[in-house]
Image (cartoon, rainbow, N blue to C red; front, side, top):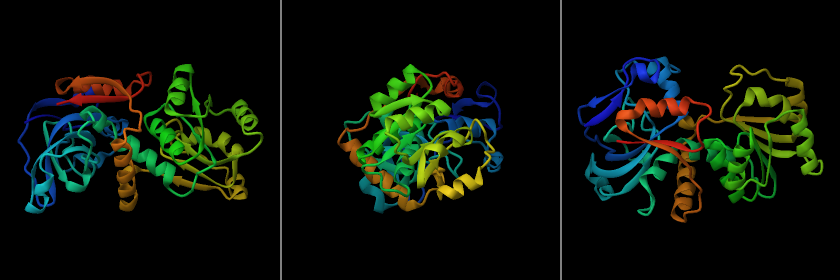
Amino acid sequence: MLAAWYKKFGTANEVLEVGDFDEQYPKEGEVKIRIYSSAVNPSDTKKRAGSNLDILKDGLIIPHSDGSGEIIDVGDKSLKHRVGEKVWIFEAQHNRNFGTASEYVCLPTFNAVRMPDSLSYDIGAMIGIPAMTAHRCVHNNKNIEGQYVLITGGAGRVGHYAIQLAKKKGATVITTASNSKSAEQCKNAGADMVFEHPSEEFVNHLLDYTAGQKIDKIIDGDFGINLQYILNILKPNGNITTYASMSKMKPTFPFYQMMNLNTNISTVFVYDIPKKAKKDAIKDIASYLESNSLIHRLSRKYPLKNISEAHIKIEDKNTDFGAVIINP
């Protein structure tokens, strides 16, 4: 089968290889999928660059956790009914060496979720990490119906879905964006109000918008740099749920300010959220896909032979909005 892989860490052009690879066969509890679309996420490029030095200890890596395709074989008779299903895939390359950057992948049946026949494979591949992270952030510990929810970085991949999911749960959604194009993306996703990224002015503008009412829940995508501002708009007993802190990877905590607010802080690493949370996310996302009630965004598509270009596209901070897809 045709596949892409890396045997060492480094830049995309240095380490990614494309060629023929031994075809896999499903074990008990697994399904074999013909991949038609494979999504590149920031976590995929970070792993390739060496963010997790342990992943190569068992051999080379076929990258990418998210994708979509058709189930063509199963590892045991109890799964025979799944043959022919069109599925979206999550966590293909988590605690496993072989992901979706290939013509075929074998993985546990739980990680292959049936999707509507009317949905394109490209859209199916976009779902995994971004939508499931967004779902966990929205649902983790607070009923948000009728409440104010702030989503920083609303134009990002996670923020884009978080806006939509929070609106579906009845929240008034405020987001931040870095420029007018990003603000337009937030509005298109359903945000009620968009401000520039957190600053002292942002705090005043937001409180003017809410008539002085502070925020019930904050979903944050750059915790270390935003914390100093978002604490000033958070209600006592409010919740901050964060899934990234790239600008300041070792944040400092104003302990007494947080203690006096009785601040609840949750972190989300989607790969290791509880299995029940994954099942809840799958159930809700499947329902939204069936009703075609989510907005999806495609930035660029590449053939598998150009996987290095796709990785570079993700690493470019000035990239277009939306998913980067590879079609094996």
